Amino acid sequence: MADYVPRPTMLNVSLRYDLRFPGFAPGTHADRYQACLDQAAWGDERGIRSVTLCEHHGIDDGFMSAPLTVAAAVAARTRRCGISIVAALVPLHDPIRFAEQCAAVQLLSNGRLMVVAGLGYREQEFEMAAVDRSVRGRTLEEYVTVMLKAWSGEPFEWRGRTIRVTPKPPAPPMVFVGGSTKNAARRAARLGLGFFPAIDDEEIAALYLSECEKRGIQPGPVVLPRGPGFIHVSEDPERDWERIMPYALHEATTYASWQSKGQRSTVRVDAKTPEQLKASGGYLVVTPDQCVEVAKRDGGLTLHPLMGGLPPEIGWESLRLFESKVLPRL
Image (cartoon, helix red, strand yellow):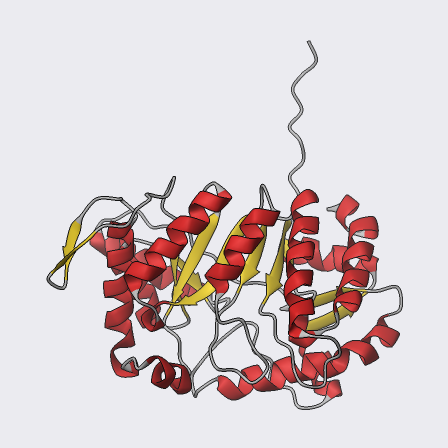
């Protein structure tokens, strides 16, 4: 009998969506939602690791505000890939309804949902939800604790009433605590959950591990974001930079404008001109050979094929070139 040879594992490749649609973009917002589902199905068939969905509210360009609804649609179009909410702005939600919706996505996806519990930071979103921003840390901890109890399917008491979430999911979603501060690291340890910082910071990861050790608990996984937030594969990068630049500048400038002093995020790029954006390294338009180099350097890739309202046909050009000339080499 021949010796067993394990099948090679592909580097971590994910698809990310926030489904923005600025006023200057052609087409419709519905085009982007349909393209998201079609691309998720494409990626699932080709072995991508996850589809990542984001959340913000009341944004002019229609940034995705209902990621669990989109997650359910992605679950219906895929069979194997993970479905991640990065990040769910937990303090803005009713935790029982959120737990019920997560349970439904778990049932639809056969247990493929992962949630990063984020605090949120934009004051306008807290005002819109009538939520006190000043206690968002305590609120997140309370709500996550409630959600973890809810997924047991058993009754429990909360705020003077009996709660029971049914149907019970096949397994609780994997939950991480997000954030980019020391408080976030300590919060993850207090909750006994994995840590998913918004920044590639080894020091904050070490603090989380230290806090877990102090509490005598087994630490969860720590996921540090690495690599560019957007990468487009092209046979003619200069040509495609011109087509992509308006969307990239829109995304970079609006996202940076939301960040308060001290707010840190790997995907934040403080660029106001095309030259600054190109030099930042946060947005890349590369040849297939260069894409392979980036993937091997970073241990994977995050593809953001509808970034900033990018027309779906441009995103598809990159995905098809990635499939033919990059994926076989990963």
